[in-house]
Length: 211
Image (cartoon, rainbow, N blue to C red; front, side, top):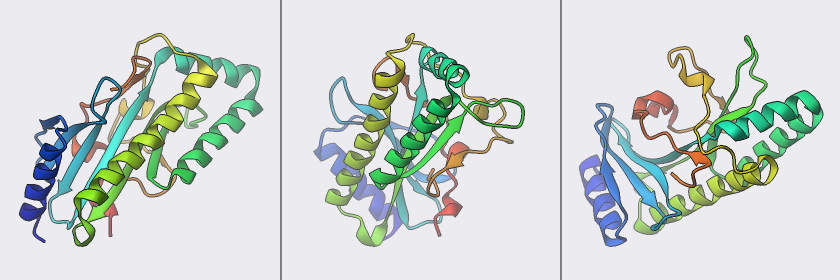
């Protein structure tokens, strides 16, 4: 299957499911779309990308943690550091158990990155030899559920937040940023969790990682 054929299929499948699509300019991609899944007010934004020179479709979604929730995390770090470490460990284990690829961004203190949790992303690759409508839609569903799990853990432990997106230290100098990843990571939602849709395909997802 050629990238052109894959693009036609993906666009046809998304249209058949009446999924909202936004075109994105990206010189590194044969196709880069932002799609809303699931439909309705609770939908999240996902990047659906065919990188140039690769025989795969990559689906990913970035979530930015609310400023108020980040402050609550900082408070916990000060009052009970062990409890904070336990919460982050359980968060990582939940992402691992979800079976998707993931990455997290933690707040900087000097050269260290102890927290708070400032953003996280989930992603999945789908190679052309296994590309079907069912596989694509099931990947979207799995990524959505993985996001929801972390979002609900944040809301349950740290409250609804202030409704204002918090900082992401790794993004302040993207050339030097390093993402803390669980599995090699590819590369909106309610008001208390914010999705960053401004980042281009090349900012946090390197298609050369998929070998």
